[in-house]
Image (cartoon, rainbow, N blue to C red; front, side, top):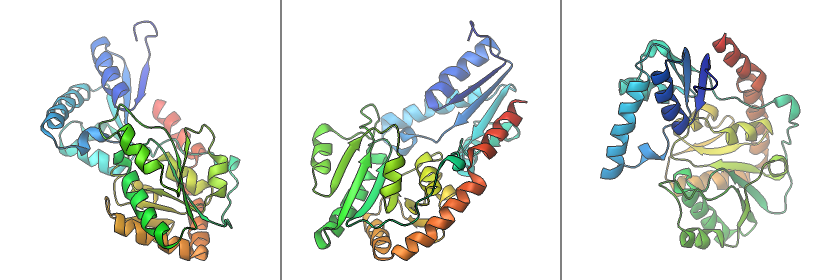
Length: 293
C-alpha cells in the first residue's frame, strides 16, 4: 500500500477485505471498495469458539466501513441486508453488482446430451458446507435402484476450512462406485459440455460462478434455497431449488431431471437466456468501470 499509494483499493474475499480495509483506514487511502463475496463458513457455525470469532470479525467490519471513504459492494441482496441489520455498514455507501459474470460470446451452449449414463457435475471447493455429503447420499440412493448414474466432482479438498473433510471421511465418500473425482480443473469446458445437469446444494454462497457458467453452457441446475444460489436459479424455470441440507428433496429433484430429458432441454434454454441478459461479463464489467469513474 505504501509503495503503490493507490487512489482506489478494491478487494475480494474476507481476508483481503479485512486486512486491506485496516490498511486503507490507517493509510487514509482515498477510496476503498470492499466486495463481500459471501459470509463464509465462519458464519455457518454456532459453536462458542466461532461465535467469538464472529463478534471479532463483526467489530472489524464495523470499524473498516465506518470511514466515509469506504464502499461495501455486495453480490446479492441478502448479504447486504445482513450487514445492514448488524449495523456494520452505512446503507448509503453500498452497491450490488452480481459478480463478474462470463463472456457468453465465447461459450457455445450444448443444450441436449445423450449419455449412456446420466452425468451429474459438481465443481468447487470440496468441503461439507457445499452440501457434498447430501449430494453423494442422494446419488447413492438412486444408484442402488439405477446404476446408470455418474457423479463427477471437480475440485480440491479445502483443508484449511472449518467444514473440511478428514482424509478418512473423504476417502470413504469418494470411493463409492458412482463417484468420479477429477481434482482441480483450470478449464471446465469439456465437463460442462458432456454433463446432463449440475448440482450445487450449498449451505450459503455469495454468487456461485459455477451456476453462472453452467447456465451459459445451457445446463439446468439443482441448487438450494439459500442466498447467492436463489439469485441465479428460479425454481422450475432455469433449474430446481430444494431445501438446504435435505438429501431426500435433493434425491427427488435429481430423479425428476434424470427421468425428463425434455425438461432439462427447456430449462437449459432459459438458463442460457438468463445468463445472457443478467450475467454477461460485458454488462457487469461496465458497471465496475462506471463505479471507478
